Image (cartoon, rainbow, N blue to C red; front, side, top):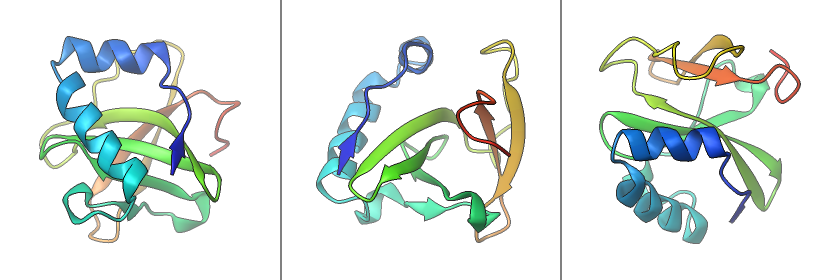
Length: 118
């Protein structure tokens, strides 16, 4: 699986939280096998939006969309909502939407309006 280059704001998010090494490890697993068990890859609800996530660790998840069947774009990295509420101060002028996974847990997806219409 190919992955588009990570946006600069998301790179800063990783650095600020000392997640770069963990992220890179999980990203390599994702590129080799998007369904690797340690990633806990899942399609978020509502399913028609085709938004997915995979785990960096127990606290942080990567939110991504499929641009093509063999290419993904990471649109957000955030805390697992079971651990905390979303941090709305990270990036100004972003819309926040809720998405629920198959277990009913809420994921908060920050995105630029033109990127993903919700």
